[in-house]
Length: 391
Image 1 (cartoon, rainbow, N blue to C red):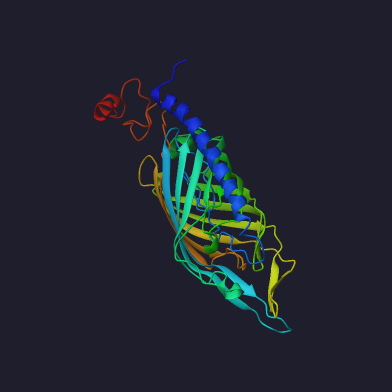
Image 2: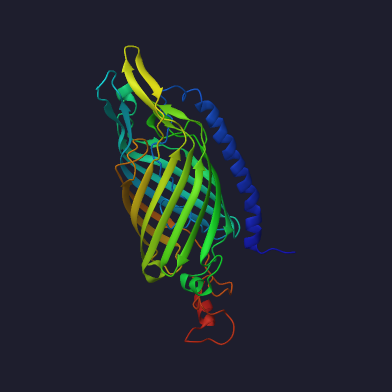
């Protein structure tokens, strides 16, 4: 059996990706072991103050991960920036009956950028990677309650990586063809993600976890005409970190989104989405006493949740390039990782490898994307002329 250059390239790259993934896993858990010593106790700064973890690849929503994977052998790149206001507020109760507590803005304003990559390994499998950084922030950190200084202006956040496996893969055709065909891969798709984080970020700046976080999730979407409905369930599995009563541990993730194409071919779409994280760790009350701060479990659980209204555009016929803008805020009154409001701006280039007529010529290179390259030209469509024009 012989393989073409593209196939040989994919076969060669697969062991390299496996070695890279293994190395990242070793680094992640080595970093976890080093972090344990500095992240224990009741005043740990080792939490991630930004709960929006953007998904690499050709995404439709901000909070719901993509079901479509990048074309095999191609690399998708993207940048998603986010501004959030007061995502982390610490509340301290004063001792004595009728006493009122005080609020400290651990993070007051924050601008982050997520640099995203996805490499298509096969038609169903892709490798995901995300490197978030803090471009600018202000806030007290833990200084108001435990002493010290406020947050630094910039910070490195935890690196995330993993695999995306399309259980019901999205067919690599344009929207018009998918709607005509219907069924699995056209009307609906389903993708499993298995990821983890490497705790390499700046822990003192509320930008890194205590350990690596395991990130399994299952995302699906369904298209009816110009309407797309997406949903995702998953978890962020981690040990509990106590940050002055705000206890962040394993969280169960649920996200839903609805999008409507206002203009054909996804030239302009609007969306409404929401995400909730059910935090399994019991919260605590922190009080000031003569001996210092005292943390007492209070039987309360938090469910950080956000909503977002967005606009999205895919200006190229191939759908490979997308622009996204959205804004929203908190759905719950929880003070840990729920911003007052948030704005998101994203740019993504993700080669989808669409070949609507199945003739082996990608739509973006095909002068007749809906007519196979055989037989006589119809409707003024000339494949041979198109082939001569291509380099």
